[in-house]
Image (cartoon, rainbow, N blue to C red; front, side, top):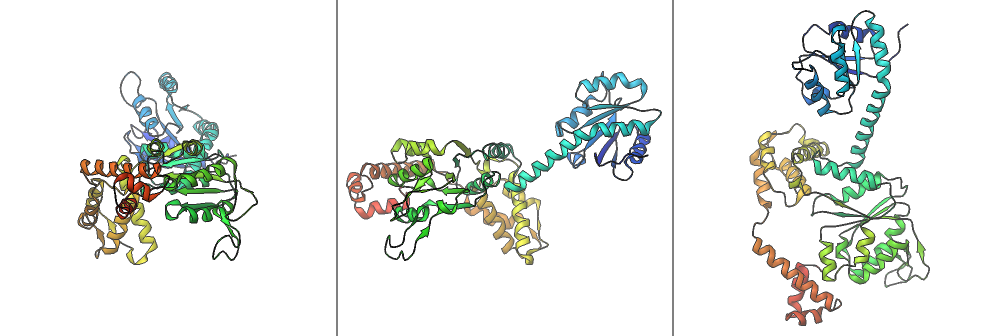
Length: 452
């Protein structure tokens, strides 16, 4: 009676000297009884895509030259996928070589000869637990990547995803740092999705509100607490109960408001605007900024206690220029997504010369800029192909400034204005006198360099 097989389902057979392993391929197909797929590959050279979807690799122990034939092939497979089961097969005279390959990292040995079907069935049974683990790991990896929705294969992104997965289940605050447009909110959403928190993900951009409005936005207000408050309103902390609250641009908060947030982050308690009853919530706070908070602490414009509380874990989102290879992946992702959103654009092609232009662009606006460039180019293009000319005209408009003198002057201006405001306790008139400026001049600099 044949044994029913469910795993492995995809076997790659590398045959260096056809038809040496043809009998083995036939035995695999017989034992598999339609449930086992065998990919027969004459020769020993293969590409990464040849291993895609493969559950087990099998090759002859005598493949290759040198003191230990087959070693280079074993290494080549292992370099591409260290967890993939690799089985060496041997005629009776090659068993000693096969045993050495086992010691070098091969998974198992199959001796060819009489009763081949029985030996193959035994091998497949032995491989089942290993392949099951392999498939489960692949499924988890795919699920994690889909859940995180983070596109990228570069080493900085892989390290970032690993840190997200590690801290996601831990009920503590996380601080996400990165330049504008790098995808900090995407990281915050990934942290929430990978956690077990049943509540919602709620996002607030702190830079969009004054202190008074931000307090009502985050904590809510009671009826009659201010003009126009005709009914009580729930704030974002309450909306995010049992979930995650994402505080974007945390560096824009004033010092007095930072103290209020510190208490809520620390103890999970707060008062609604105009309220007397202390409320308690279970919220995981994820904060983000593109500012240098340590520099702000030295300037006296950011509370060190709040930084310490938020920075249980700090995740740095790498800028696009530090993500080699990801520009092409992201460009293709945005290109395909935009065409799905707008059926009228179906059928367009993203050409290699367009990708070459993108590879050499600096992307000061990071991923957000790349998405905008791609979508605008698709929209404006009147042909069926997106070329270097389409991309270049758009991308050239956002070249990174190269004047270090201008950058240093702006940093000095920002620091002087912020130090004056901090020293004046937020009093603009006093800060203007300290700087020797008219009040309207200070207002200009505050618009240019917003003070928390």
